[in-house]
Length: 432
Ligand code: HAM
Image (cartoon, rainbow, N blue to C red; front, side):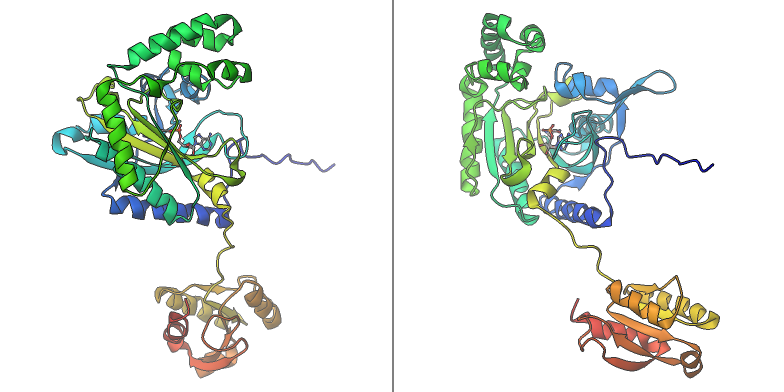
């Protein structure tokens, strides 16, 4: 009896990217490197797993990210590790661990890579997703916030995403936040009986987190809660007004959203989000971030202010409606008949690649007709037929297959085998 083997599937919320999609990813990443590089950012690569305590101490115990969504597992010594749910905590840990503040007054880092959150998967929300992000350490001035936000805007423009909205807020600092948190707590306590158990607990442990609550009934009540952006102290108000002013000068017109708190505990003062229109629906925040002036110190480092952001690559691609064509065909397909010709074809293809052009053999072999059909289907620019006669003569016919190559499809020219790479380069140079 034949046994059927149940094929294994990818983990829910963690997706494969086949070459077409992977190319679209790579294009976004390349633009990030280019645009962030122009702004003086250097790439940092931190591990995918960190001690879980790093995230609970920075992002906060009461946040959904830490409380509900983190992949935590003990390593072989029982130390709790977590797959990183975001990039800031690891970057700050590395910044402290390598004492970067002692050698650089201002540090600009960017990163890209996978992040992990056990959320309910839906369009634009995955359990493994990819961020490009940046962190600017050592500058407390409003110019830093504005420069960073304008850089994100430039990056979004560079990948072709237009029509994004920028929302901006300030959530205050240690001077004004306690009074706001107390006012919010009083509000939450007054409505405690109507709120979900999570919010009843948050009212006592971390009132601001109640503002992230997704329960519709709670959201309706919270709509009349005091707003963080409405109770700033003088210096926070001044900082916020300056950020807005600089952004206006840079040609950006942010909408002020006094309720924008963001779902992570480490923020002080500026918070912002870029929202894309179109088909993303509720998962339309394509990039988001803010200032976190206390985090470096809270994790055991020096008192260094910072501001940063991250964008979700999957969401950027959804917002772009990016469908990338399958990879372009080879520049040359070599169709070879017979053992000696196939061996010569291997060498010829190597020589073409060494000249910086894409060469392919029809590895299946088969008749000349079937190899030429393959060249056509695979979108090769040129095909070259190599048999015993061509080997003996040391030359072969180079046939143009598609529109690339200067001549017309079907054109043939005879070329010495050693001259094939140079001839291809000459014919393809101007049309690539
Ligand atoms: P975040 O708002 O948690 O911030 O995530 C930033 C972006 O990552 C989101 O706006 C979204 O585009 C994308 N994203 C988040 N979760 C998912 C998901 N489950 N599936 C797909 N995309 C997702 C941070 O991560 C902060 N570290 C940003 C930051 C850097 N703040 C200061 N520095």
